[in-house]
Length: 353
View 1 (cartoon, rainbow, N blue to C red):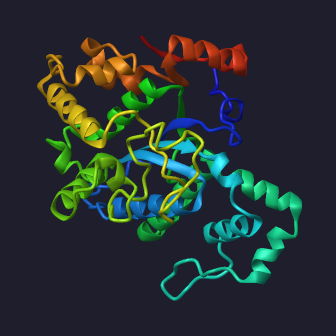
View 2 (view 1 turned 90 degrees about the vertical axis):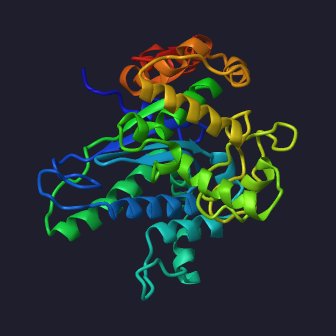
View 3 (view 1 turned 120 degrees about the horizontal axis):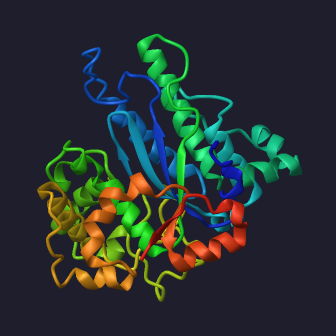
């Protein structure tokens, strides 16, 4: 049976969280050392991270975390149509023309659009509405990622043709428990693949970027984790969504933004950054040992608050990408989503119990 059309379960007009995977279609590696050709493509990881950071500054989409591996990349993305609706018409046109510029600067970067170029979009209501919708569409984010890297890679190798698989894979994450499990799965991918021994050496992951900034914070300021994640000092991770969300300080519908590098300052988990990194560190050690072990008592409440069984946590992370297909969530959230979308939408879900 063919894959379900993404338009049936992805809606740019709703705030949704998805785990997206894009794989290289050729035997040649996306990044790293290609054992077949003997060529090193490690520099392409920098291309991808730079592109993701640029897209985070343009789209109304939050990047929660990411990982760039040798022949594929993982992204956890949250659409923010509520943020896009707060932008005026001029801002919509400006951001779109930064994605698809009419002109480039001497360094090849998109040139700031002229007013005449902005007016072409602003003065066309139908075109303006379409551009506004696309700026919170995860499929357009993935398209703008894949096309840019494919062009650079093909030019470098002096070849033509497809670089990526025809379609990227997308899993809907329905609740905080599924978001935590997926974020951990993505951040620990290099460790599970034996490409790194610990979080500090897991290059080009969201966790590594946050750790580098956390080290910088400890030497420069006494800000709390919550304040630090929203400051302008996070050079490595400032384009990604903060980890911690506090309902009283950060209302769910808050669109306030102090950084031009990302769509919003809204976090995505009810735990502190240090607690998340500590949970990752423990999980990574247990996975590498090949045994389940026991989660320390002070970490167990984190999982319990999110409705996860602490005894099955490591097994969940290992099997996350293998068994969960279209959507991931608790039984209640899967059922609610099926009712909302219709039973045809409910194909190959994964339930967290």
